[in-house]
Length: 407
Image (cartoon, rainbow, N blue to C red; front, side):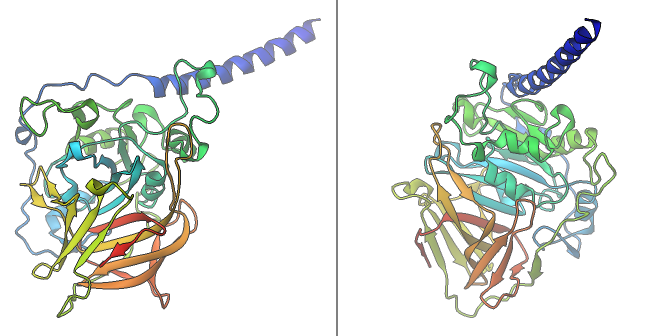
């Protein structure tokens, strides 16, 4: 009798332990955001750090090959990349900080509306800055973020997930969300979760003021934006929080973030005497012209100026300068969706496919390959040689296979 009671109590203890762990995870994810509704402040008064960038630019950025000063390198060598989810809804434009990202990925998040994953590292070294507007994560952006070394700072506000406060067991009914698009499940599976100790910086749950806060009237004083268009991040504060969590250049285990990082290859600019691809245009989805993109080649700077929805795409924080890129990559990807009742889209960014690479006023027919989510995407020309990116910002446009690209 005593032996049976002991076995029963043992099984009961295991059950309670497992249930408690699950409840702890759900509680962490369901915890309401901290009060980030601070009134508007004059942002520039908080962003004071700047370094002298007038010295010779002798240091190569490992992310995009751009050249910077030694002072800037001294800043980024104490840090690791920030991979930030930034929205592109027309009501959120103009955005802040995106012109200083080293690499930007663009894909549809839902309903034909695109969203960005912006990689900040070298371009963010010269001074503090605001990054806006921070939005929720999707799995394909996480798969791109995985390319930036050991546990980059993944900055977002929520994400597609299967958690439900009012559902039995805390899980949404089957069919509400396709398991392939469950961003929280993927973050947990790759080991980025960790609450206030992980490299997953979820502004809806584990990071708040001063690193991220809502600025209701970001674009026009006294005019409040919708809640989802308010979140603003401040990069130096993000990095301060990362340092507290043990995610400086080295992680909590003493491993440098770039220990196994694979850098692309880079080349100095060599513009054509006469551009052969000077106006690139495409739609992500028919009927969504406000998210249509044009990249217009500027021979004077050997760069491509971005136009979105027929309007110059400018950076609100940096003097409303028009965003430009040294390289524009069209990565043709398989599109599925909506794949569930919540109308999530799914884009396959692993495997291989075709691409177009625009640089120097020229176009290169190319292929892309990313065998697994943990591998680096490599772009090759039709002879199989890895493409060298022109030093400077790189934009990667994940365009559904079959969509027309004019140039």
